[in-house]
Image (tube, rainbow, N blue to C red; front, side):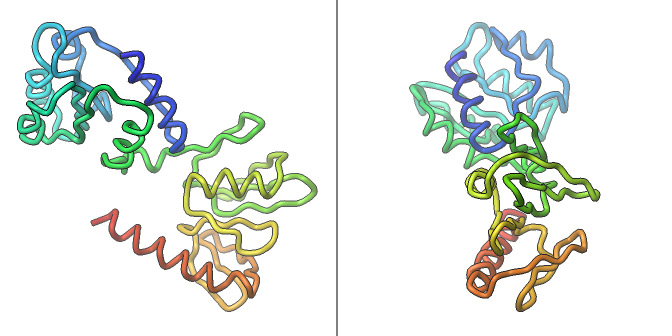
Length: 227
């Protein structure tokens, strides 16, 4: 249990997700006594735990909640058919490590978490990733332009910000010192980008073809995810 918790914290942090209201239960009966529809986004169930099996617990949970993601952890594939019947989101085989948990996070439906993804800056401050429209670098300081007309400033280099945001989401350096969110683009002109908040930022001539390609690839990925 502690191994799974540690791996989840590590990988969720890598992907920019937060883990709130994490609870551990010693048996299937104990989680059923506590469970209420909508209480959790993901439930990990060990098939072989004390009392009733994870499969039985999942059946009861699924009767009460049709949306919660259920993930089975087990040492064998013998219960794969039951997991399919119960519409489990994933089947995590033991022993597992960071890479197996990372693959699981990539595979399961995380749309409900996507809107809440956060990025933490070197000073400890945080922003929701999808609130960031663009960033501007000047005099060792980054000004982050956010939805709702808000701004946030942090002391860090442009390279540090590029490494951070591009590692977490779809961001692109359109010209020296300016990093934009591809999902916030409203229109692409020859020498500038119109963003969803109405701001217009320049695009260098050398970067325009690459930006156009990156934005097209982002649009295709978004359509596939919605499908």
